[in-house]
Image (cartoon, rainbow, N blue to C red):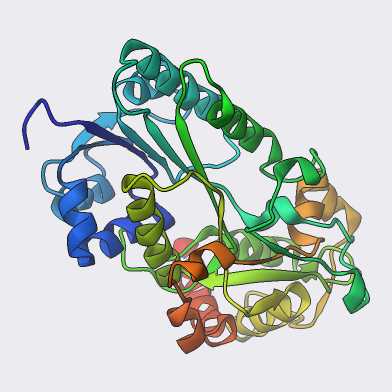
Length: 351
């Protein structure tokens, strides 16, 4: 590594998706060799944190920059100096996303004769929500979206992720100070990862709500169906996307999903039984949350947990990618194991 190497700015490197990507990238010899041509610069809350130390072991030579997503001046400056920026942090943190785009545009303007800076952004399939209020819709009214025909402007602007994604799409289309922008839309991610953060936030959020409210609850009747994908398949998909982007492929949006779906009522029933067995819930049965609970997350909660969002990864599959891990370990295989781990950890944290 030399100081004149191009820089790769990474937000969320120690998170569930970000750290899985690093593990997957290291297994792919050609991508790993290409990425080692960059100096990796990672934004971390605390360089002395064990996860930050582990990141240094996973990717020797990484430069740690202390800061949070709220430190927009730091985020903008690092993006300005980067040839590649990968954001696997909070996809709804609009001010940091604007800072990334502003920084990349400034870097582009300062180096007009060089390749356009590349921004790869992790969003989510929640953007597709039909806001069905948890009701079971007739099959002919449930839309399964394809990334091959996906258009942001076709979706309600109030849907999750829509506002920050508009910033990214607009920047990618801008002719002045141009940047390359690739948005990636994973389904609900499950399973044990291989990175510094092995589990995602969904069960932590809903499991804690179940315990705190005393109900393994749902938004409305809980019949909403969501596309899902195993974390290892997310890693392999990102490897494919990075290789295509770094080879100069046309900038497009990608969905990452499997053929399996998660129905939230069944999710609540599985987790509720585990929590009941651990003495964390008196009643293991699932029922709709009281409105005081659903109101706490507002329209965002209804979109994320009370709407159908289903998508197919047609662009990735056309490039030879398949969700092989999702086929081997389904959400219903993984969920009881993860729920047991959550219950044990939750009880230990309060003992």
